[in-house]
Length: 468
Image (cartoon, rainbow, N blue to C red; front, side, top):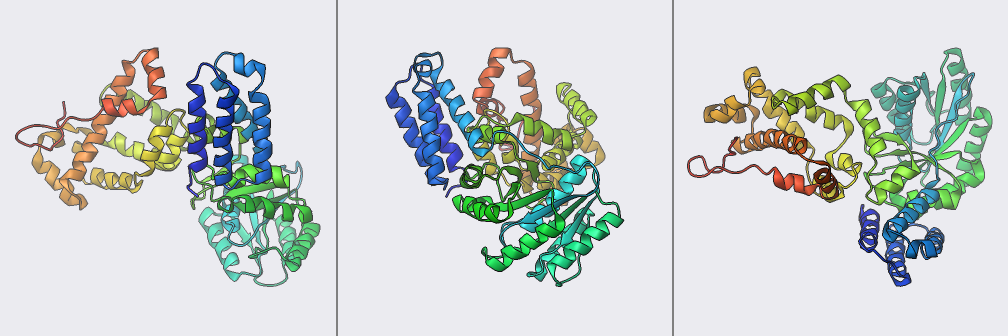
């Protein structure tokens, strides 16, 4: 299944409607066929699809929609609200104890990304809630799990309580006692993960639950398993009453099947979403924001949160002033690359911005390592060259020396020069735009890229970028 098939097909179906000033029942039926196919291809549970389609159709064929203004946009809103309802309406966080330790028990099948998710959850709680966190390594059937948790604990500076491969029940008892004695606020228990659910595993988890009396039982679910994830969640929930799910391996856009099936099939709300290997690629799951992302409406709130976490406000203001005054240089460009790296990949960032869906697929082809290569080129310059880009523009000797010093070609350096010039031109263009032009840009952002293409020189030095 293609990663973005759900998102792209739904967006295509919506676009056909929004362009029409009048809708009839046939238009709605045609869109419903597209939506049904999109959901089934994304491996969404069949019963969920059936209910989803019925609910949308019931609201969409009403008199108010078919005869109202902007009927297409109203239908898009209905689809958005139904996506949100299926995924759980509101975001749900951790329920913390006011006094004493908050205990979180994590459960899940082997390979669902449970141990990595624990590390990310611990780092998230410490950063967002400023709480003292400890892990208990109680997955005693896989020695590598204890080793992995220890490695993650050292990496993020969170203590791991472990006693090797003894009985998991004893480890949990001793670990909780240790946490109380050492004034920990939150304890996260890593329990046994198996390749499949069996009686022995479930009984052990029931016993651990009885000992720990957890505030939260979080099930880690692999987003790539589609509707199977919902059935696995249902089995765990029936035995343990899970309080929430962590959706792991969730790339920029949801793959659909798991996100849209879990809540409806199992009754477990999705509380967190995790993607990638980095410890900060973990966020609270907001159904409304995810619905907007799926429909290509962007997710400005998450982008703002990420930017606030990653970017120093004074530094950002300073960079904007330099861009506006045309004094933006290679030192500033290097800072910008670092900011982008902190926030995630380019394609992920563009996915949060409304109207940027067209550029998102192109950006996914961009290797983010190119930023690192450009960084190496900048470090190969002298301080004077970084501060004054015209020194490089005027001298072919400087260009050859910088390229040689970085182990790259002059052509690579020319791409960097073009990137700097494009930044300046884009800022200049946006500053001269009126409200109507800015609105047009939000609908078709690629026009900004078309208007800022750097012209090539002619005659002598052909192929080099001419800086005006």
